[in-house]
Image (cartoon, rainbow, N blue to C red; front, top):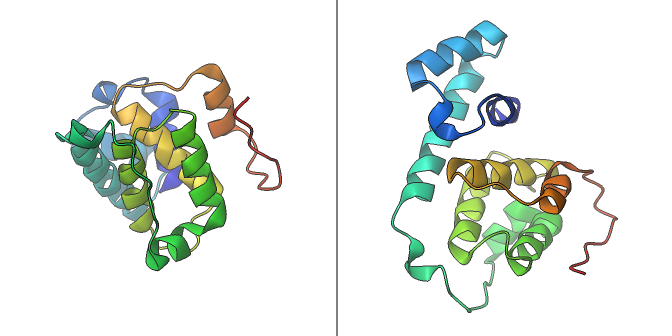
Length: 154
């Protein structure tokens, strides 16, 4: 599924440049993606688009602290939680976007969620909202998944 998401990001510069789901499924199949993966990716992306396009901006300026319940922490893992906190402190993600990223990660059948997959989720969220990270954040999102490298805000 994540190969398809990356393909969509690299092929269509905006989500509205994508063809309708049926035509997109045919194109993805013609490129060589598996039908089950295509179906899974399109459902995941549709759910993301619905969440990202919703009227959730009421919490956009929240100054609260986000506590993760055990189930979330177990699924996300330390690296993913740290990366989400880094992106939020760097103002790449708003509190609403953070919650969407967490929700999209929790629906995966993976525990803990790999840092590379979490980066793709963030990229797809920003893409679905027509936002593009600045050059440094883009490098961080597409850069190495080395969990040993420290993340600095300065």
